[in-house]
Image (tube, rainbow, N blue to C red; front, top):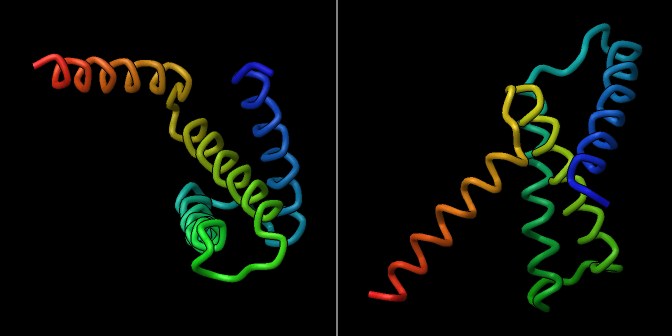
Length: 108
């Protein structure tokens, strides 16, 4: 699956969430509210990473870890879209710059 396919799935799911938000709350979540939800997911992810390392007990840790990583990726894709960021292009640019910088330091 290509990143663009993952992005499409994430944005389709976001459209469903927005319909549900309108039904429940009369409006969609703001970007700030989405970011706060993401922060909560990152906190859950941190606990699952601890459990995966054996320093916290959480039943069915691996399955929950995969789920939470997926939730975090969904949030990042949706936030990037709502902020007008081409996440794929930024990722390629950023990782290229970081790789060049690290390679330069290793060669020095």
